[in-house]
Image (cartoon, rainbow, N blue to C red; front, side, top):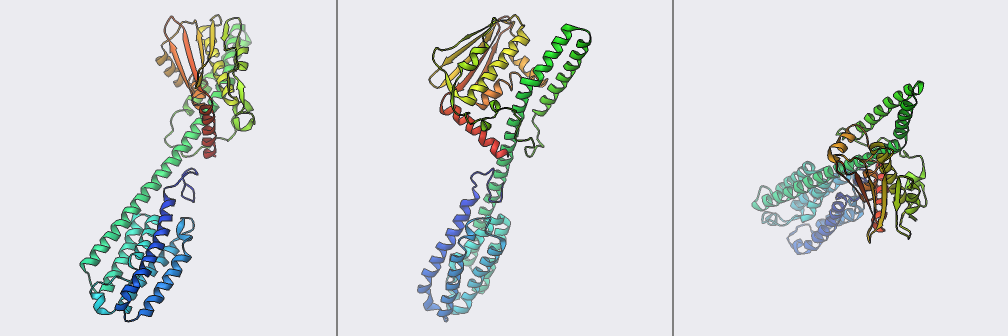
Length: 421
């Protein structure tokens, strides 16, 4: 939480309380000034009462701005305000006739004294509020010349109110700190997931290809392939460890730029929000063993969504080649619905037990489905569902919201990245 009492640059529940304290001081000042003419007949020194109320009025009006925000109101302002209230209570005994003091005449500041207690509550919590309330209560006892039932009632109410508000503000501050930390962790996790996707789509794919081709070539190339395989496994383990929950994590430490091209960074691409035809990225994937079916009219999505969806489809095809074999066939179907675009990738491979296989893959750092596919779709506000049955192939269904949904998802991602910075 920053110096202004905001969590992650957002709204703070504390700021309205400061405005309420400032308004309370003004309203109770007006009440004290309005009540005094009816009580001044009891006073032996009416002028002294007016002078005090005038000084209190100037002080209250002059400190409206400091008392309206935490960053402007220091402890010195609060102690002075408390002293002004206590002085007014004690001066009541000096200016008011003794018989009327004993009869229970209100003090000069009346309920204006509660404003000082509320200020301590909002600034420091329940303990400073209790101390300020006790100071006002002791002043009331001295002014009355002893403990009366009325004074005791007022003191208890004042201290309870101050302590309750102080406790609430402490809980609110703790909640804001927790929220700020959660937002930081969430932003850092998203950044690590994007980094993991980039590594999976680039480095790991190259290492896997080197291992496969080296083993096929034999000789020195086989040794190179073996080393590439070892590095691939080590890197996958490192990625899997980095994506595991880290309870000791406090703030993101990754660099702000982890993607090397504009395709992966909507902030670096001025056309990220401009609509593009999804078919332009899906159609080139067609080949001898890949069939692409798409509508005859453009399938428009924001540019960033098109590129991320195209990358997810490419990752799905890589999985087909790796797990179903080079001879497996794949079918890509692009469908337009009123509120979303659906892309299905189906193969004729052997299929597998989806739940068991995906869990094992994540533990081993193989992130093709969890990050390169599902992670991308989640960041776009969409979803990725995988269906597979032994002996019947595998199908992945990608859904991306159209229009405002995709734009909102992109904006949300940018906001999270900004809060992490």
